[in-house]
Image (cartoon, rainbow, N blue to C red; front, side, top):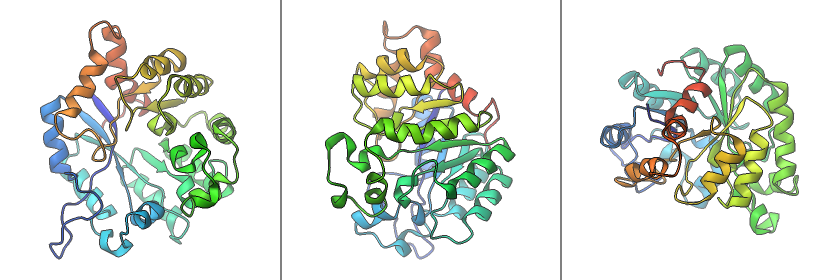
Length: 305
């Protein structure tokens, strides 16, 4: 079983026939499912967006919210889940605070069968322990759902000592409230400890430069609690940092992920899997855990759809 734990899918055309403008790469569900079949990927975590989830990203690309409202919509996510119910676990992003009924929509998404929700708090100028997000964790606990949380640390400029005032709105405000990764982790540690029945997935293994030192720092954190995992989306699998993360964090906590369609287009997907299975790198059992078994543990062995 191979499970990609970090995938985004975008509707290729809106109702007027205009192509999606968010990313130039192939990005539709059909294109990804074809790649799954070619690469031997059985299931995936589909993280769906609305434009309100990533406003600074859209502004940075000069994209108007209305131009992507249909191609990055919940309607498309539900369409995908109906068409491929045995391939995807659905993790819609928790909508930003500008959406008045965001909590009601989050509850409705879980009632519709979402496996959990993804949080991108720094896009909203928030940190994981902010009061507005506490009802989100309570909701996940109520539905026995899981949380994918993206520190967006590479957007916060902390690893490169960027001036917070030079950062986009949202990230700018979040960056001013923390000093370093350990400071951010301290905010997240409180939440992970408070909600032991909720599994947390640390997107992009902390969303930092994937160095051995950073991997060890992330690994030390996730090893503190049995309910936190790390995915490998957008990271280089040929780096020795992967061994550092597995050794420090635990072979049962690291999960294969790509962040498709941003990365790993075409044959690169298969190469990422081959990097994990490279002879002499990990025992077969460990490779199988990274590629799929740990993801099954994260979703508590629920079926997709």
